[in-house]
Length: 244
Image (tube, rainbow, N blue to C red; front, side, top):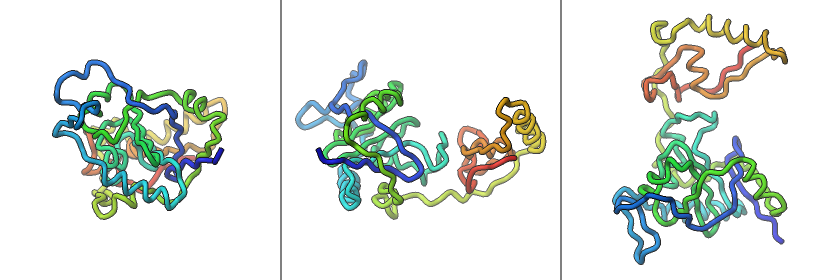
């Protein structure tokens, strides 16, 4: 059996179950969701046509000798709230829910997401995409065991290549310090509190790495003009925070 290579961005490897088909979510009646069983399929006006982008990403997969490509819904820092520059999952699928993993193969494409997003996905995705319930990491691992498939990391993000000049720019909003009335305490007090917890911890760590940018923003009391929901989220921050 030939070995199939699975590619993803270099900063993240995700496993996805290999069960394909068109599972039918419950209670999706009405004409505001897609119906891929009719000829021609019924697509509401909210659906995004992904035929061109899928064709382009499959061409990129062929140049990399990849059988499948995994597209997560996060950014390089595993943030929940990401800037438009990193919304690769939404751009390639048309689905804008905050949780989901997309997989594109040479013949099929599918999205795994939590059941609370099923109706939204049926309203936004065209019939190029299959929709699956989100599984656990254990089920992903079990599905891949003995499959003779290999997950590989590649240095170039294929979605970025296909997105091209349409991709929004890197966030560059000014970063500013929030007053203590909003943060609850100074950054010095927060750093001192983290150090206190480090000393009390049974493993006595000598350093802590805050990889999520909202964690860095919270500890430092930063925000930017692109913050969402009033949270101290700062997609303009350049990277994580290391504290000793």
